[in-house]
Image (cartoon, rainbow, N blue to C red; front, top):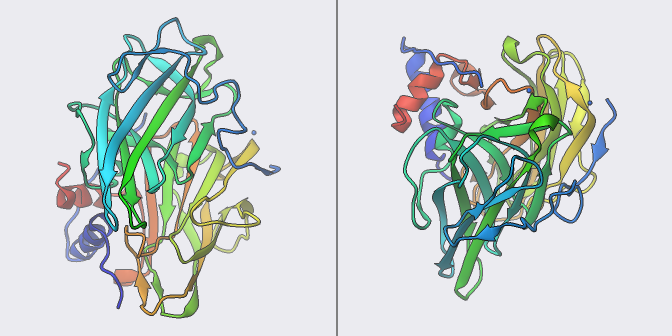
Length: 374
């Protein structure tokens, strides 16, 4: 029995079906190094001077008080602690403002996850209120409209440093509102006290050259029969023309417990085998490697991605697409510059076949309406 699709994808595909009968709307937003170098991006390496010690005084608000004119200053946002009962799986978010009175340029993001965590997404939000403690939330809601909010980083490791290339940074506004979204499950027989944190390490203003950004790429057409292997191949997912020339400098694959591999290539078209951007030697679904590219890889005119996911389902049930760890996913995410806004792109053969990238596609507003984001 296939598990139902999560809300963001089910309504997205429902919107595609509705569009086939005549519904449409529009949306847009703009917000900046090929040999491949493999690295895991963890805090034990790739530190680049940031590390995990933020070196600032903590006022107990959940965000460290940085000072100075930029460079070697860091700001930490804490999630939790939250006590998680055995067998509980949830997504919970916390929203905090950074204690800054000036824009900052973030050249590293250091993420620390607790023992029951599945993955953590770090967002910058355009507006909203702070929360005193983590609360249940709908995952992925700020990936469709970058004018409202956009992800900066996703971590599925217990500890990871996302290290941006020299001169490349995420710009955060004065008093930037940040959301940490944590998906967790306690698979033990005991209660677990779960904590997490994200530390933003800034670079000096005179070092800044390009604005970084982030994209999700995936395929929801997953149906892995019980006790068998399954391969999902996406031969070509075209990207919007305005993204031609972007520089992809880091890539991470994403599957759940039955995942055995994610591979991806940057291609000029459907017939092109392309340049491999992600193919770790020993893929681990629960600790997926982040592969860095130095120099970064340039998306060609008319280009896009070819990607493939594989699974071995050792369970007694068929497994479909979904957010739970008992479901499966086929995703990779890429960090790039110069910024053209956050992107969510997917390919599906359902409803006659569709390639969709938000926020460019007219269907993105329609999907946002289903999600209640408008």
